[in-house]
Structures are given as C-alpha cells and as structure tokens.
Image (tube, rainbow, N blue to C red; front, side):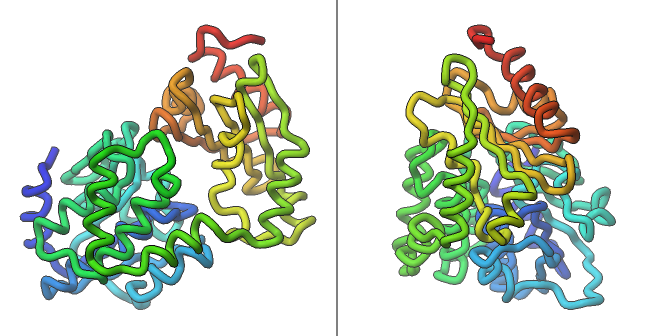
Length: 318
C-alpha cells in the first residue's frame, strides 16, 4: 500500500494517462478525476478522463473539459473513488486488469490496482486526492474547484457523520484558493427541480417503516421515473432523503435501474453498519453509507434487504 508521497512520486513517472470514474458517477469520483487530470496536465503530462455515459447535469460541467478523444490509447491507467472493478462502466471493463494506480477511500476497497492507495477514514476520496496533488505542486483554483465538489458532495455539504476535522481543514484550504464554492453549494445542495420534488413526495408517501420505525424503506420504481418524466439529474442522491426522517437510523433506498434490477443504497447511524449489511448482498461502501445491486421483484428484494439488516443488527425487531 502506497503512502501519499509514494503515490505522488509514482504519478510523476506516468504519462499518456487515462483516468477512470465509477458507474452512476457522483461528485466525488468526478471531482477527483477532474482535479487529478488538471494536476497531471500542470506537470506537462498528457491526461484524459474516460467518457462516462451516466454523467448528470450537475457533474458533467466538471468532467467535460477533460473527456478523452476517440482513439486515445493510454500508457497508464488510474482509477479514482472506485472500490471494485464491478463498479467500472461498460467502456472501462477492458481496463479492469491494467489499472496502474487505484486511489480510493472505501473500507470495502478490493486492491485491484497494480499499485494502490486507500484511506478508509477519509470522508471523501477528494481528501486523499488533495494530499496527493498538494505533494505534486500548488493547489490552483483549477484543481481546488473540482476537489471542493468531491469533498462537499460526499459529506452532504459537511453535514454527514463521516465529516472530520481534516475534512473541514481541506475544505478551508480549497476555499482559500479563491473558488466559487457558493455556486457549488447552491447547485448541489439548495436547488431541486420540480420533478425532483415530485419524486421525493411520492417516495415519502409510499415509505414503509420496520424495526419499531427505525428502518425506513423508500423505493423509486421505473414506473415512478416514467410517470414524472424524471432524468438522472432529478434522481441524483435520492438516498439522502430517508435519513432525514426523525427516528430513522437506517434508511433503505431501492431504485429500479432495469426491470427487477434494483440499486440499493443504505444510509445508517451507529447502530447499523451499512457496509456489513451490503456485503451480504455482494456490495460494500462505508460504515454509514453503502450500496449493492440486487435482482428480483420489489417485495422479494425488500424482504432480502430486511433479512440482511436483521442478521447484522442484534436488536432488530421483526
């Protein structure tokens, strides 16, 4: 396992670099990738991001300037904020066995790179990228803005329990670079489309409670997305909704990706280890935020999730 200085030294030897992001890309993977690409280019390197077809309206602007042109053949491949090759987009699958450096912060990280650096205690992969890029050179506004996107989005604008003193120190340093963090906060945390509001209303209306009302199960079937004509941007980070319900310390969000294929997102308090629960279903993540993909009819998948929670929570009330 590399140290920050070792990772920085290794990156100095790379050139013609392709940077990978994960499926359903969030602000952390996009912000890390964009900042790393900008930092490598500042060193005179050729670096690009592998196009990701699932970008949303909020993340695409940070990605677009660095998207690789058709036909680019890399010499080196780096992944950012990806815990497992199972989270590679389809066009990244050919690189699954040739990642030269994997940079991540998930406890469930699978060490698939030829070299790896992971910081499980980091609230966001952006914190680790900040330290690596700071070891490579000055943190310019071009680097600081996507890094702020990375750190702020993975901490819910610094409201989630994973936020640490180091998280705030990194955010302060990024803000000191003179970036427009107010716009980031407005776009990502204080703006919702009408379709998003309709999605949230329907989810809350159909929300079901279990385990003496401590577990909330919310669902986003394809029929709901179609009914309100919602886009991926409208559905971004819907998993944060359930945790806002008073008394709930385990929020289960099930979003239907394809017929009878559900993306499970778990957001939990100290009583429930989200990673341990999701590992039972082939997923992973963090203690308070993890996910998995499960297949079957909604009711069958819901019962499977509840059973997995019960296996890991001794006081779960049936």
